[in-house]
Image (cartoon, rainbow, N blue to C red; front, side):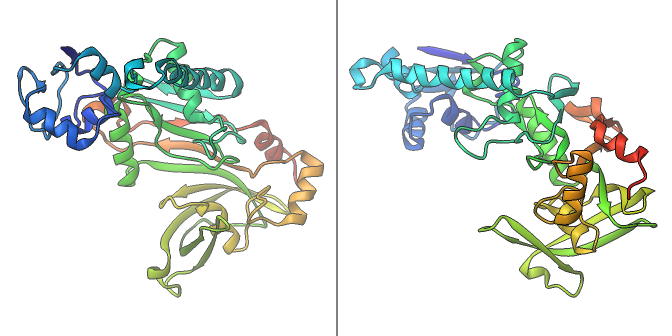
Length: 347
């Protein structure tokens, strides 16, 4: 018999969902058969699979050691598989987390508790992998938690901490991450329900003297990974997504305006495409920006990334596991180029 006690990162989910992660090499049909035959029990009793797990629950599995290892993803030689190869793959994954933590530089921890961690991501780093060989903020996060002893290799079998809001590779700023299952669920819910207010600092082309709340219809071309924005309500919402963006000028220069932007909806490339659509492209944006203007600032100031930074996050009144965040705001330090452009007049 093998026994496992439910901890914070397993609690709150259905028993059958936990079993699929705990025994990843077993089919769903096999797991339900084992539940019916009481070869897998919960707290010493027969279970159906739909039970919600609680901290301290005891899972007992009445398999032979070889069968248990097989369905855990560690087959024995008798199964015709190479356990050393499977173990090496797991260790390679751990080494990838460690490598990301060593190699990805400039990531700042803004806040951390038992459930969540907020990071300040520099431009140029992926939030999540785009390809198999990539290192991203996600791998850095797990590498950091392993390094600090706040996560074990065993715990990774049933839950992996991850980012909850993604930023484009070349957009820097605050990324919210879940350290626990509870933290991930609650953060994702708050983001999904648009309870978290997200503010960006940017420079755009031209003069903007007054703030505005603008709406539009965003259309995405999956093949080119580009979006276009049409006017609202002239555009047809059924052919795209309604987007809302609020902006307020911070300071106006001769050829540019520093803006604070609040992202009401959170669609792909929304701020960059929306501002470009109203005639004020983001400085340094290679996809939706003004190429000649970008080149001027690249040669004069070394602007190699789009100057769009997720600079502030504000939480609503929150109760429950994330009550530490209730009503709080978190601010990320801006790169030095922002200060320089605020000091210098422009043309």
